[in-house]
Image 1 (cartoon, rainbow, N blue to C red):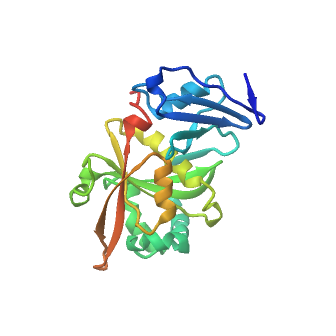
Image 2 (cartoon, rainbow, N blue to C red):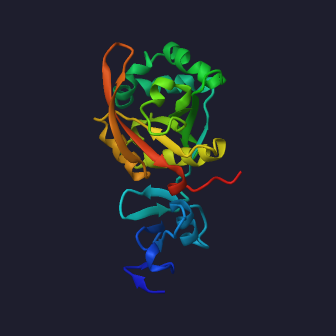
Image 3 (tube, helix red, strand yellow):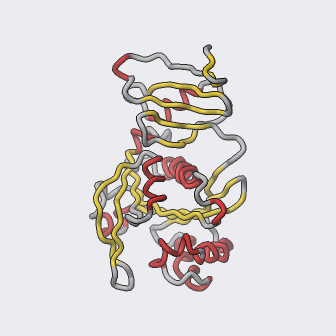
Length: 256
């Protein structure tokens, strides 16, 4: 196999008609290059291209002509169900300026306010579910998800009313700007595809000024949709941008 600047290159064989979508899987100093076959999801193509390498490819940047994946062993990102014991930490995260800027409409970021807002979700008595994101076992942020059809007014704004909506925040400021958001949402996507295998679309609607969040969704393969005004509890509105992910194209069909 040829060496290019110390990087091993392997090009998967395919028909010419399948050359339109290419991908790269990186592990350490190895870089395996492949293509997406007709009818194949980007994830499945990455797994096939990775071949005998140890580990599962995760998305790094799916926004370009070449879809970038990586196999990481030193940074394990996972999600677990939030418990009421997490709420003091969630309150602390909500108080951080970089979080509060985009989550101010979720109520006061005090322990009492956070408990009132999220307690029922944790208990499973509302359609919204709460998750804690962990890196190598350390809690660093949270994710919430819901089926849009459970919130009819919101569902009207998405291309698929049965889509799964998602919101997210990195609470620990030292992890902001380190590419962790992509990894957290990729871990969420892998979890939700098995928990709700009938969902064919995931949907997020960050504030139009939140450039980091917009770029993160783009890197995950979400496609930009319409802008719309989302009413706030104080009577004002936030202008947000709808982003949709085609689950079958990016992840494929979940195995029951």
